[in-house]
View 1 (cartoon, rainbow, N blue to C red):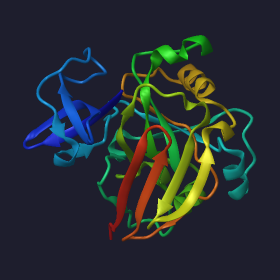
View 2: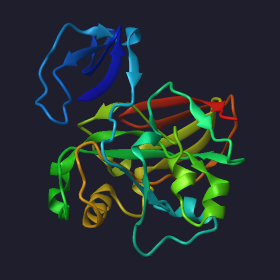
View 3: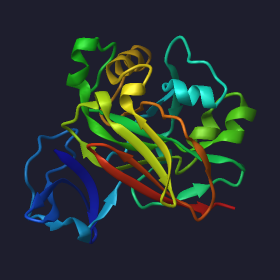
View 4: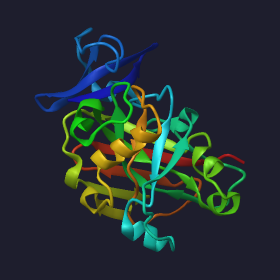
Length: 259
C-alpha cells in the first residue's frame, strides 16, 4: 500500500495511492495513519490534481547511517566502521517532492546521496531482530543532502547534514516492500550518477533498526536513512536531482541558491 501526504485546495490530508484503470488516484483517509487505522474519508482524487508533500514529518528525529556501503566509504577515503555510524538530522531539514533544496550560503560543496529510508510506526526501544518488522510502518526515498566541505571542516556533521532542506523524502510511503535487494539510483539533470542495490549494504535494515533502537527510543514517524551507494557528487543551483528506489518511486527536487 502506498500512503501519501498531499495538499488539495486548502486541505492537507493523507491518502492511499492506487490505480483505477489507466489513471492514478489518491483516496483520502482519516487522520494520520501512524496513529489511527486506515479508513476511507472521501472520493478518490486524480493524483495529477494534488500536490505531494513529504509523506512523513518526523516529530522527533531522522537517524542517518554513515558509510553503510563499502564502495561509498572507499570513494570517500574511509574504512567501513566496526559498528554502524549514527548521526542525526533535525526534522526541520525535511522537505517533500518538488520542493527546492536550498543551497546554503555557508557551503561551497553540496552533494546528493540517494538512500532507502525506513519509517518507524510505533514507539520502540531495544528491538530484537525478530521483531523489527513489527515496528516498521514502511519505506520511502530519501536524499541525504550533505555539505561536504562542512562535514570535513566541522569535525561533526550537524551543519553539514542538518541544514534546512537537507532531507528530501517521498514521494510516498510503501508499506509492503522487501528491502533486501532493491535498486537505488540517482540522476542529476537526467544523467545517471548513482546505481546501487540495497543488497550491497554492509548492514541490512534489520540490523540498522536493532542498532539504532539500542541507542535511542524510536517514535512513530522517526526515519532511518540506510546509507548511500557510490557515485555521490556535487550539486549546483539549477540542478534537478532525482532519487529512485525500486518498488517505491522517484523523488525529484530542484536546487536553488540560498545566497
